[in-house]
Amino acid sequence: MFKENNNNYNLNQDQVNRIIEMAWEDRTPFEAIEYQFNLKENDVREIMRYNLKKSSFEMWRKRVKGRKTKHNKFQNTLRFRSKNQKQ
Image (cartoon, rainbow, N blue to C red; front, top):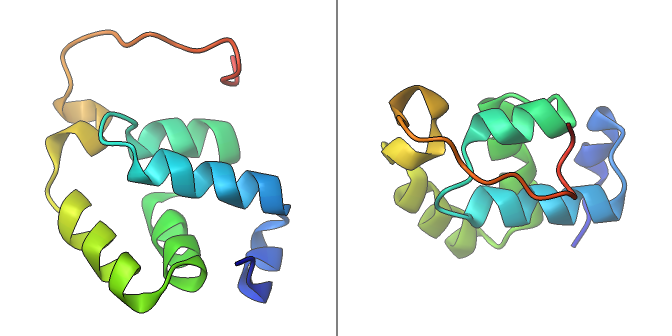
């Protein structure tokens, strides 16, 4: 479900899919998405809004709103980094 608004970010379908996957993951902070794709939290929110059904987007927003694990500044532990992640 790739929408035209993502062209503003110069993303391909695989990148959008990965961003959505990372955004849904509880322990992946927005800072990791910013580091890999140079997208701020608001950019991720916009991508999610345009690529999910309205009910799915609302469920995601409710889930991540105020969640401490979605922001590095609240985490005290080092996390494992996959070889697939940008160095």
